[in-house]
Image (cartoon, rainbow over all chains, first blue to last red; front, side, top):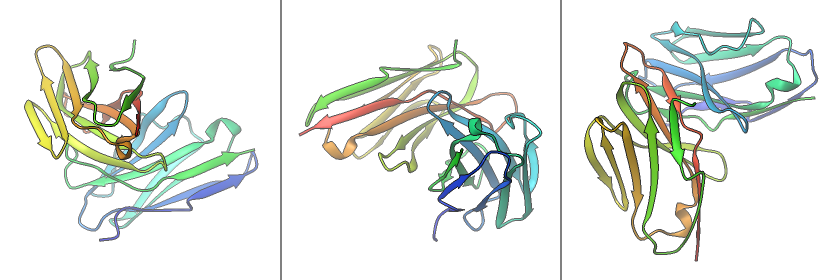
Length: 113
Length: 110
């Protein structure tokens, strides 16, 4: 298996633009997690899905952030409009059990200028 | 105060040394994870444990539920062990959410 796939790997955009991050989980994994990592706050859970249904989105910072999982093999995290403070590395991870071992994607490094 | 505290924040060692990284948490948990983040940024799950001890190669993880404390040990450390080690806990109240420590940056010199 190719592991968790994220795209793009790097994204540079201007403040106010819409940003869409993409994730393909490992086939057969029914849990998908979106994380954000910054120097100041470390790793933080933004939202997670079970069987394509959002279970906990309490970590989504504000209405500018939204996430969808239209099917078992694809999820998106959208920021609209983007702000410089959104600059971070965004990781997607998947697992077969919510409490089980998580497999992380390589991350998307987002820079908002 | 963070719910998950790690110590030390930074650690340097000579190749071959025995290394211990500590994790303390203040919430009830159902499981604790140790993760490794390579200098290139990739994150790998090392261990998931809810009691006792687990061993994988030169890595050993222990947990004491009563004391709310876990340790990650590396025996015969090697420069390739240089990474950030992150402790994360899953709460015990019907959630799959992980709460992360801030990580311990380890550098092993030859």
